[in-house]
Amino acid sequence: KQEVTQIPAALSVPEGENLVLNCSFTDSAIYNLQWFRQDPGKGLTSLLLIQSSQREQTSGRLNASLDKSSGRSTLYIAASQPGDSATYLCAASGAGSYQLTFGKGTKLSVIP
Amino acid sequence: DARVTQTPRHKVTEMGQEVTMRCQPILGHNTVFWYRQTMMQGLELLAYFRNRAPLDDSGMPKDRFSAEMPDATLATLKIQPSEPRDSAVYFCASGLSYYEQYFGPGTRLTVT
Image (cartoon, rainbow over all chains, first blue to last red; front, side, top):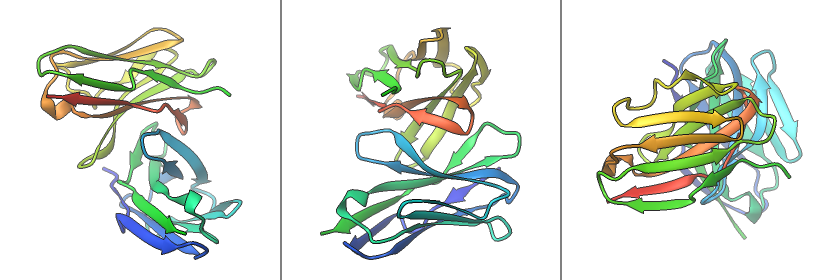
């Protein structure tokens, strides 16, 4: 059974700092890995999706990497802004499976 | 701007009462997911529908939970009878494939 872990559970950084969020998964036979953002009281918004054949995806100031052999993914946020404050969740899906297994998220606070 | 809508947004009820949560998927989407989010367990998949047919509801307590799609524009999740441990945020998500999921804002359920 796939398990997804995100450490730390919370992170506070000053505005402008570059930061990395971590995600680890136990089963390397994943189909893809996604990063989501969740704002308080709202649903999840997909940020980046990395297929198993890819090593990274970029969108604006966000860059997500995937290392299947080590069971790890990272989300890099450049030049953080207060508007980046939210909870970030990663989710892994297995080959041929519709199930997304979510981590519990990292709550990011960017201090002005 | 197409969005998944969920009603009600908040629900407070007493133990033993029936609770019905509704979801309107994005028009044209043929997959619908129900998730439950708690601090302890994170996001858990409850049910998955494709073309209105339930493909997986193994995540739901069968004795009290039921999920249906009466038509393509409405998905329902019912709890009867409700218990305090059902207190959580319930999310509906829709998409055209299992890895492309658009989340609704959620229904926050409190059972006293």
